Length: 63
Length: 155
Image 1 (cartoon, helix red, strand yellow):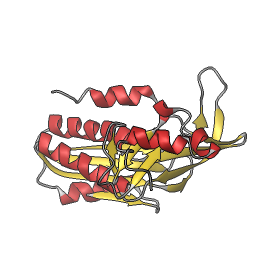
Image 2: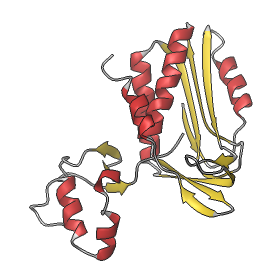
Image 3: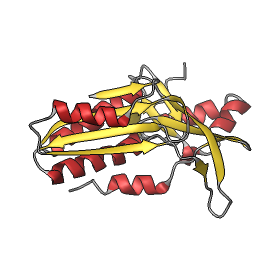
Image 4: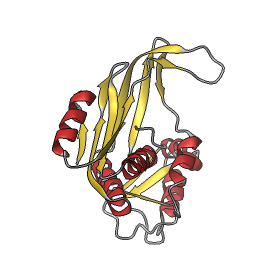
């Protein structure tokens, strides 16, 4: 679990980036990362306090 | 109705059933997105695509499509909506997505169908991977899709 002062999606990205080289590589291009909280799209300033599920993924290409 | 499925579907059959189900609607519009049989990057020569693998974020996909459907129903007087989206491995020419709308009049049917496709392209979490003789490539998202979706805002 991230520490208490990690409150937004962006905080979480920055915190995860510091953890391993793999995380750093995954988050190396933030403008290509989309985030979802509990399966709804959110921006990086969204609060994560009540989140049950947080997802990061690249821009989508369906349809 | 939203269907996110691994199994193939026949777009013509789906349209026939949709028309029968909505026999009191005066206007029906449908869109079919299908797998291209070639891959073209800018000036490079086109390469044949052997197959396409579609991954999705199960759960979120259905939620997003339901949200898009709800928005369309609030915005246009439409009688019915059908969205079918495949995932898994597809071959060239296979239908990926099918959207149909039924309304009293053509403008509402046309507009809502286009709105659904434009929003689906930027909201529904699907990712395409193309398999060519040269290897496997994730398909890049296009800025154009964002612009197309934005045209529905504020009106």
